[in-house]
Each structure stands twice: as structure tokens, then as C-alpha cells.
Length: 119
Image (cartoon, one colour):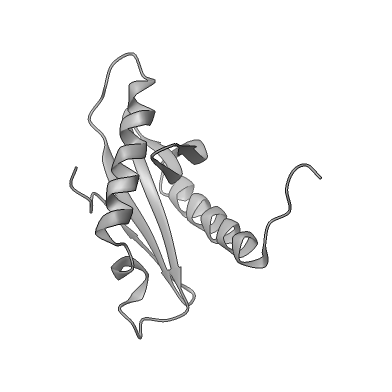
């Protein structure tokens, strides 16, 4: 069956990504791509803030008992995100400065953290 069915967890993840996308659009960012994936990793949202590409990781946790959504981003996840961004940027004729943002959702609280990953 095509497209493949999403598990309940995957479907909820897509809902959170859509909530993050709407939030960023209201803040003036423009969507470029959703769920960009390559052999090296995956990027939840690729946005533009003016001419700047913004690579966005969306993380959700039910609550902050174990550090919250933002704290759940591991060094391995950061490496995969940076690797995927490098692949994405190679497709462009000129490599512009870019940034990495996180949308952290804890319960029903959404927080947009800008330029939080150094690459």
C-alpha cells in the first residue's frame, strides 16, 4: 500500500512537526522542505529566514521530568543533523551561512530555540 501507513507514534510526530511549522511561519520563516532525509541523517524542517537556510529539529516530550525535549538531543543526533545539512547545502550553487534551530515541545508548551547547534 502506498503511501505507507504511519504508526501512531509517527503520526503524532508529524502533528508536532506541523505545529512547529505553523509557529515558525507565523514568526516569518518560509518553509522550504519537510522531512529532508539522506543516507547520513534527517532534518525535520528546512526553513528560510530571509536568505538564511534554517535547519530545524523538532523534539517533543510529555513533560520535563527527564530534562525536557531540548535536552533529549544527543551528540549522535547532532552529528546526523549536521551531516544531513551538509548534504542539503551541497545541492545549492553557493553555500550560504545557515543556522540550526530547535523547536522543543514539552507537554503543550512550544519553545523555539534559535541558533542552538554549533556546526
